[in-house]
Image (cartoon, rainbow, N blue to C red; front, side):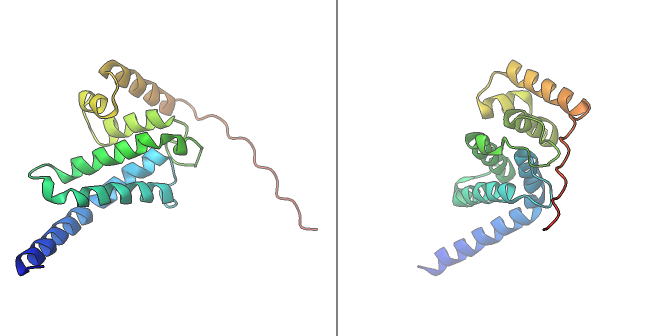
Length: 158
């Protein structure tokens, strides 16, 4: 490997590290909302984000002026959508009473501020459907939360 290639790799690594330092917190929060995990206990969100960041790093040199945050957010959303069936169980997060599709649309639209048209294109739905799902998700979040089943009392040790 030449000195020039080594220097390019070091530059690429520094640029990517700076990007991650600035964006990882917000992206992890978005991933945590998507997976409906509590903020402090979010192994699925961390896995999802790690895979999205790895993809961004692999494409780093080909971004050529594209926003790396936008690219990573798209990859995060796409990975979540492909594996959403894994995130349907209640995990105790803020958005855990929404379906995975509702969480995806709500996070993209409200937390990330992505336009309806972009959200629709990203997940492959008509704009009207995205609007309807977003409205339904907002209504569900504004409604009184459903009562949680009472916990079974801990059995006494015998």
